[in-house]
Length: 314
Ligand SMILES: [Mn+2]
Image (cartoon, rainbow, N blue to C red):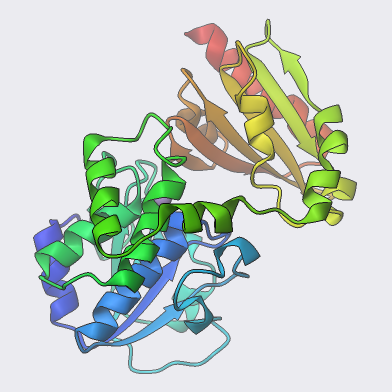
């Protein structure tokens, strides 16, 4: 059932033993909002465990407290409340199998499946980090440098460092407040921008797959098995498609295994969330993704056909 942020704050205050988990394939918002809430709840006397059913990308290992994340293999008893952040409970992997507690879900994805026991959903927020800021304000928990670093990272990464259309006045004002608690934006950008040597050297192979379709309105990049195995992070490849003049929808088609291909999309005009939803995925209007159970070549044809059809219908 959907609740207010007030109710969410009360639910948390009433429970001593809390687990928090972001989605698998964790990003800056998932990890930053989980850690920001973790530091705040520990400070206010809760027993808190943080779970993630995935590896933490190296890029985010500057976040204070990241080493406290545990895998769902670890048996933890006596949790009163499981807080799921930045996605619906179906997307936190095996954590829901291990933690049998009522679920409080805080999210900003309009594709949220609304299956949690208690849900605060705010699609107008650029990041779950903004929701955590509002929650802590409501709970009257004073911020500190650690919390601020985590929330700033959550907010800044989800709005492309204040470049995407989801950037609101509230987004910037909240980020600005984090600076008052000691956040150095240059340090966070430097940590996130740095790349492995291999990830820069692989770029010619990545760019070689870049092709335009539909009068240059669609750009697709393939991350083949070979590319994937020879680089550390594929997260920024979509940018090379997105920044091309005239491109509306930028797509990265990424090898997962021989019959599973992951798709991520960015757009300037087309609603890519509804395209992703048609294929069983989700996301935001300007940034969304899905998985296609086929090999990379077929998945690339499939997503192109679906996006072309969607653009033709408009
Ligand atoms: Mn998010």
